[in-house]
Length: 401
Image 1 (spheres, rainbow, N blue to C red):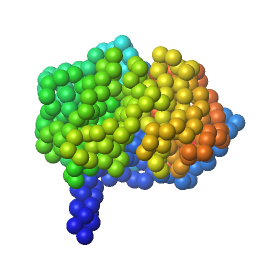
Image 2: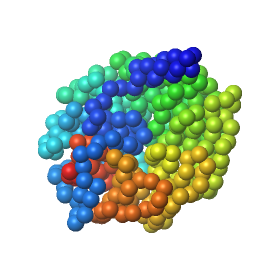
Image 3: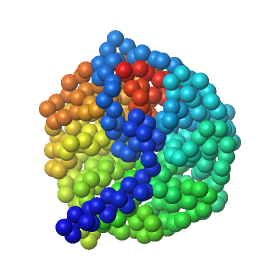
Image 4: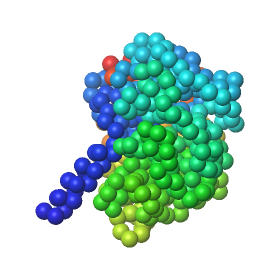
C-alpha cells in the first residue's frame, strides 16, 4: 500500500509539471510527451504509396529546428540574411498568421536548431545564439525576452545552442550551463542555473527521478539527473567522445537512462535507481550523431550513423533490457518518429519510409520522396498530417489520412 501511495503521488506530481496538450497536437520537440511518439490512430500507414500528397508548402528560411503544432496552428523558425523569424501558420491551409523577427547571425550550421514549445497560449523559442522569447501564440506579441549568455552568463557550446526549450509546469528548462537552466515561464527570471560550463546539444527530458519530478540533461561530457524544483544534481555519469558532441536525446524509462553518441563512442543503458548510476550494458550498435530515438514496448529504435556520411545510416531495433539487436535495415542517415505502432523514417535526402514497429523485422509499407535537399530535422505529426522541413527552408504539410 505504501508503494501504491508513493506511485500515485509521483504520478500526480509529474502530471502537474507537464503541460496539457490535445491528443492530436504536436506542441513541442518530438511530440506531446517529448519521446517522438504520436498515439493518433486516424491515419493510413500506406498513404505515402504512390507519392506524398502535399497539402501545402511554405518557405521559412534556413535552419534545423522542427515544428510545433497546437490548437490548429503550426509554429516554425528559420533564418534569412542574418535574421531569425518565428512563423505561425494555419496548420490546415498553410495561411501565414503572423511572424516575429530579430537579428541573429546565420551560423556555421545555418539557422536555428531548437523547436518552439507551445503551451497555455504562449510560444517559447530559443535561437542558436541564446535569444529566448516568450510570444503570444495568437498574435506573436513579445511577452518577455532574455538572452542565455548576456542575462544568465551561460556559455554557448562549440556549435551553439541546439536543445529545444521544454515547459514543465511554470518552468522552462533548457540545456545550458553544465547541468541545465530553469526559467520562470511567466517572467523569464532564472530559477536555477547549473555550474558554469559549456552545455550539450540534446533537449532536456522530464522524468521521475528518485520518486520526485526531475529532468535528465545530456551535457557536454556527462549525463545529469537533476531535481526539477531545486536544480540540484542527484546523480551523473561520464559520457565523453572525441568531439564532445552529445546531441541525441536520452531515453528514460523504469529507472533506466539510455544514451548514445557518434565519434566512435556507441551507446549504453544505465540503471539510475540506486545510490549511483550503474551500467547495464554498452555496445556500438548506435553510434549516433544527433538523431534521437524511440522507445516502444520494450525496444529502442534509432538510426546508427553519422550525418557526414549520409548514405551510411542503419535503422536498428534493439531490445532495451539487453542491448541485443533484433533487426537492422540500411535507410540512410536521418530521423524517425512513431505513430500508432509504426515507425515513420525521414532520411537526409528527403525519402520518407513507413514500417511497423516490433522485433520481428523491417517491413516497408510505403515510401515517398520530397524535393531533394538536406533533411536533418525530424518530422512532426498532428491531425493525420505529417509536417517536414528541410535545411533551405522548404516546409511541407503531407496528408497521411
